[in-house]
Length: 164
Image (cartoon, rainbow, N blue to C red; front, top):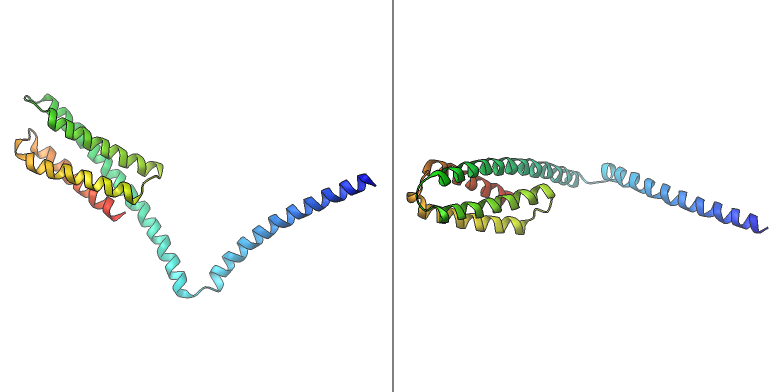
């Protein structure tokens, strides 16, 4: 008799577990059916718009990462040119290193998925500060053409960051 009660309770537990799993699957299917059948057209358009915006955000993220890689490459060239030049370039190199750390930080957060509006605002403010400082000191630059190219890239990055 004890064996029968254990077997019966085991069967009941197995049946309950199977039922719960099937109910979850059925509920998920029902939700999809409701979305397609009983939803107003405006809501469907809104859902399509959200999907499109997510795709655009992914595309913007890829564009942003490409621009950041381009800026890093230009930054490397700038640093080597400034190191090769004569004169005291410590302050200019220091600002380039700070700018490089900002680029690394924003690209890491984009790649890791920790990117958010707060980080974007901080990046924009700091890079805007470097941009203003660069404009003030541009006439003393050793390699003004490379710096102009780098700063225009930074400007595009800031615009992309503001969009996302």
